[in-house]
Image (cartoon, rainbow over all chains, first blue to last red; front, side, top):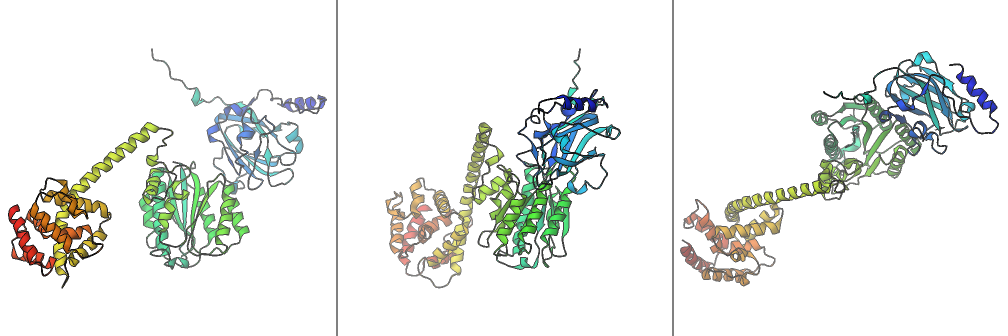
Length: 193
Length: 403
């Protein structure tokens, strides 16, 4: 697993052009975007023209022009349920230097959180992003032991890099592995003889 | 059909004692609340509605969001009016009540009735609005009661702070003839986002205030055949109901005539058909549709007179002379009654009753009434006043013939 971070770093150093290197998927991990249960994804305080789909979905998140923006103030609360139980390994956040997220708290398996109870329980993990993370596609390692049995993930964006009123996130990618549970969608009826 | 949990905040402050909305502001508000609860629970059976007060004993939740309409209506009883409304605290409590709703999939909505003056300034209200928007709660405001200079502006500012994609609305209801609930029926508070529920749409249609709701909750664009079938069956049903109503009206009109005669008898000294016209005028007031009823009555009279031609029924019509009447004596009598009629703007019905032959023939057809009974004859005499001896002679003849 440790090879992942150094692998990304020399790639960044070696690249001569100013283009940002593509993130290396850590060995043994998969991009969990395929396991997200889209019907249950919610985001509080999102701007209706810049929704969470822009940051999460394949295709949308790679588009530079599409981003998730906050509405009334700079905080965001994103709820992502998964179709299977997963283990989270690392995460990637991409956003503008100024309005990108700074402090992020992650909660595992807490349904229907609101802004009022984010401080009620300790987060499963707490991240402090720098502008490097946002711009250079640097993966953030998570406390793997805390994310062994994740049915849903709640991401709380507390503030942003520049302290502006609006937080913007271009991409959120989660890497990990699945625990072998049944995916109900794959259940097929056995043909009768 | 959106799945929603609603908290209704009632203003039961001292300002609600005022009677500029009939019967009192508080009562008008209560009616509106009942209507809204009904509409919400009908539009989606899983919707829940809760009620709380903003003033009185304080900001209290009377009933937490529930789909049981009876509970909601019951809690409105015995509410006391007094003190001042605390809007900020009420909205906070409402938010809390919604946060702890049982079904987390429901959208959160607060409906606030604001009838007392708003003592907060715009900034505070905007902050409240932003907090609601952040937590994805929609807000509907019914601005009624006290008319302040700044109140509408402040409330508009609050709504624009909360509003995201048109889910929050504000309605200003000035005092006047139209009841608070009737005004609300046509607003988006009732009808919801799209066309709205069948309840709301039909209520709006009934109030004839043109909501954007589709009839029968079916979009003609989406399913034209179904909409057409529903509409046709509705019209058929209506026609059937009208036919039944007509029959009932005929039967009742017979009894009606009896009532006319007896009521006119109670009036003292009178000219010709004054009492008759008074009685009929009163009756007319009771009757919702004058024209329809006159027609129905004419038909009833025609049937009771056993006259084959429908022309006889139109005798009451002003164009009496044009009508072909089989019975010569009847025609004469009618002409006499027309000539004798000296009142302008007299109703058709009074002409009918002026004609004694008509009345007697009707009485003929009525069971248990014998026109030759002296008491009945007295009635008829008083009905048409003095100096009608000649008419009585004339009417005797058709009477005999009819017998």
